[in-house]
Length: 272
Image (tube, rainbow, N blue to C red; front, side):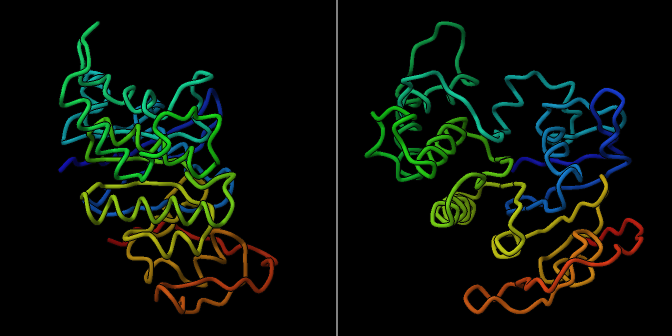
């Protein structure tokens, strides 16, 4: 199983610093979800883990090797990322998109193999997209389109899947559809999944491991029941709340009370 970790990361854009001295290890075979307020650095961290953003300081390790020193094609065989709002050429069908996911495993000008066909068929089955295989992406609903992109990522054949806000712009039914699919891919196919989510209760419900981010640093990480507390909601989101048990999933659930008058100052806390 692929291992992913980072040590002493400092990240930013031009002269703007977003993340400072962050160290984390992604649990293997689990669903890890990053939460935090807007602009706290969640997506920036995910981009660095996927080698889409080079750290100013620090190192990301993939299977114990510095990810910057691994050939791009080799990274793509181990790690797939689905960014926010991915774009595809007009008229591209779902099946054609899936074959793009096989590119890391192919040589220049090489043709599709029997294995490529089998993996594409499996990905379409796993995401329940077979009936839409010949349909153009732009003719799909938002939830169907997101499932198509996940199918493409699965075709890369990686053990590690990173997703940046995969439920953005989807209605509630399609959000749950996508999250249930990811849960199934984790439980049935052993995929390690790392994603950024805005919805706190969905994060607490679907995460095996939860990481709360505040001002570019880890505020607290661990099991949802340990991380998802009224104190964390207050300090990270500036929100007074009551934490109760989700009557369906049994996970912690946040009931907002009102905006905090002032966020408490805090130190970075790391809980393993």
